[in-house]
Length: 268
Image 1 (tube, rainbow, N blue to C red):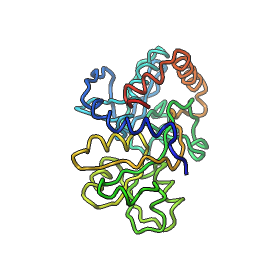
Image 2: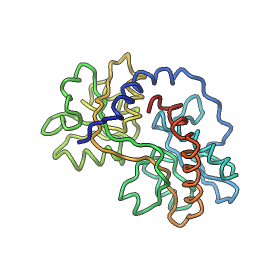
Image 3: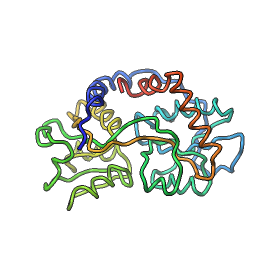
Image 4: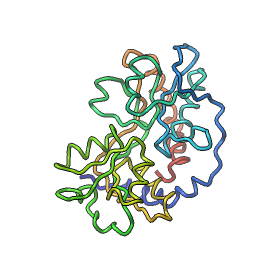
């Protein structure tokens, strides 16, 4: 089990600062969002998104927002291509990429060995990991983080086919898991006492804790895993992969990447 160390203090600040982020104004998107199949076009970048992972990628008032959209627009300018967001169910993202229905996945996807077998990943842009969201009154029950769930009768909420889902399944023998297709549904189940804890990526857990302050939810700020988020690209599309890596290299060289991240995830 990893302690968050230098990541712990930023997450505590993120929990309180996210409310300010939610009240901040966002520039309306001028990019198109589609759910139908779009033919390949060398002048167009078809971006696969699952808009259920705030603050990385989500939808508000019909607009797709988040860190990924910010990076996507910058990447479009970097490559000289128009961009269009193709809304795709999370579990269908990699298949859509393999079938050439999209060109790139920008949905807060974690690099895993299983996914690397099927697709290529760009340079990682964010360090993350799995933590828990619980009801504030139950906080002391989970003082040791996710490992508080060992040998317990707790009902654990996860989002289907995510690294959190896989981690709980592989780590906790006999775990009582209730999986959801959307993270917001898992949070609702936690509020309504249908589950006892929700395991998900750290940035999103802190985001939900902040916006559901009135329902008295709190994150347990101990990372059980260390993960890296990146863009998914077809293995045979070496040109796009090279462009993505050069893009992140330029952002890092100009010390801009962390600044962009903090716009959406304060103090990370």
